[in-house]
Length: 96
Image 1 (cartoon, rainbow, N blue to C red):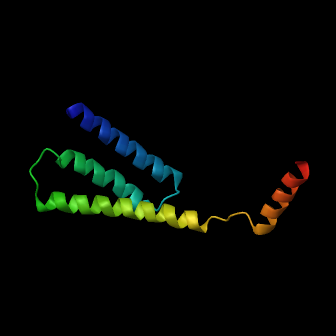
Image 2: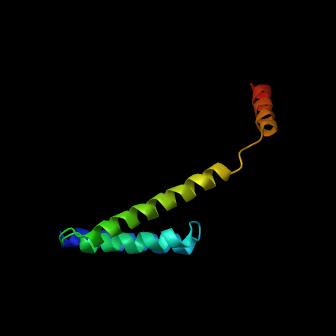
Image 3: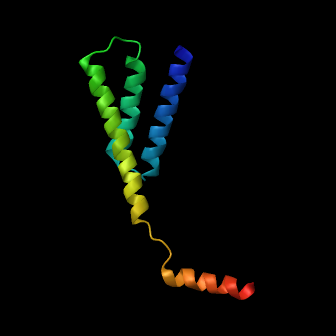
């Protein structure tokens, strides 16, 4: 049990550091991910308290914020215009 918790904490911290270094995601939820999920792993063997509930809510908030940032950046990405698609389709039709 202790080994799996250690692997989880190490992986969580490494993933959080990689998100922070990449500077793709907002700073606060990327850092909060590392802190909150590390706290969740450390608090798991202890009895449930209001503090563990707060950590769960904050960890969920970090995940929602990260998901929202991915979703908004995906929608903002430019897609090929209709002219480019028609040109590509015309070239393919000409070869067939």
